[in-house]
Every structure is written in structure tokens, then in C-alpha cells.
Length: 294
Image (cartoon, rainbow, N blue to C red; front, side):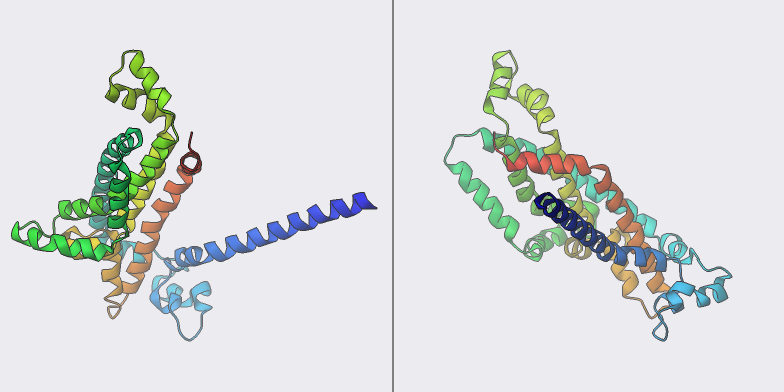
């Protein structure tokens, strides 16, 4: 009797957990899947106020294009409105911000983690204060010199500001990862004849590579999803994807422009999903390593 009761409880708990997980996945994935579905419809169907079922049946899409699905939104966004330029600008900005943040963050994080100076903590606290500041505060501080030097609107201006915003975060994360690696590891390498930098590059970095990937991904997401900095510092020709999508939404009075925005949202979200899925093991490994100090 007791054995039966014990077996029923785990079964009930497992069933409840599975149902909750399935429900959570449906709720979490539905907005994106619905947006992907709607990106292949016309505005009269996907944004119909009379009958929401038109978004499923696609009667107006069939009437206008002859098919239940259409790629006019993607063609309009990528070709007619030059969304491909915004995508290329996003690649330049995100790769540059990630690379610079990781180079400075690994060097600074390693130096602070191995330093015995008392001011190390104050440097980290100062970095944390700057990270907590609203982004708009840093942007306003850069506006005047950018205008005076006649560099406002160019991609390097956004890269500089995004690196300044992201660097404290990268420094803190990488510092915690370096603390999880015993000092004996690089000291042993130095005893074997390596210089400090050789020990850092050849011994320490390979060990904490998951932490570097995790920090790099978060730095990438910051630059990729930023709106305030890129919208204020980049001109129309150098817009990244997020401000470009906002410009589509600002022209909803133009027929079909809102569907350009829907298609652009899907185009901007799919690469993020694929990136996270590809690096999911490294992310989990990096976060776990950073949470435990050796």
C-alpha cells in the first residue's frame, strides 16, 4: 500500500510538471510564432479589426496575391526599404562592440582578479555605478563632441558609446570568471617559463572559454537590441535594424508599411534564436563556472 502511494506521488508530480512546461512553452512561443505566420499575410488580414480569423484563413491575402501566403512584406522591407543595409550595419556594430568589449574585459578582468591591491574593489564599484546609469545619460554626454568633430551619424560613434555602456558589465562578468580559476594555474605556467601574458593567453583563456563566450553573447545582445543609442547617434543611412523597424512602424499610414515592420521583426529575431540555440551549452557552462569560485 505504501509502495503504491509513493509511486503515485512522483507520477502526479511528473505529469503536473510536464503539463506546466508544455503550457509555458505554448504561452512563450505563441507571440513569435503568430508574428511569423502573420508576416506572410497582407495587412487587411493580419490586422483586421472586424474578424481575427482572417489572419488564419487569409482571404484578403488570397484576393490580393492569389495565394494564402505572400512574401511581399519581406520584399518590401529588404528590397524597397533597404533593410539589408540596416542588417549589415547591425553586423558591423555588434561584432565591433563584442570584440572590443571582450578584449578590454578579459585584460581588465584578469588584472583585477589577480591584483591584491585595495583599490580593485573600488574600480569594480565605480564600473557598477556607470553600468547602472541610464543609457541616455551617457549618450547626451557624447553628443556635443560628436557634433563638434563632425562625426555624428557614423557607425563608430555608436560603437564607442555602446562599448562604454557595456564595458562595466563585461568587466564584472569576466572578473568573476577569472576568480573561479585558481591562481596556481597561471603561476605554474610562469614557473615553466611563460611570461604573464603567455600564461594568460595559452593557459587561462582556454580554461575559461565558456565564460568568454557567455560574456560575448551578452555583449552581442546589448548591441544588437539597442534602440536608444543607435537611434540618437546614427543618421538614416547608417541605421541598425531596431531603429529601422521603428521607422516602419512610424509610417503605418502608408499602405503595407506595417507589414514591412512585421517581416523585419521576424528577420531580426530568427538570428538571435539560432545564435542562442547554437551556444546554449557554452552559456550554461559559462554561467555555472562563474557562479562557483575555485
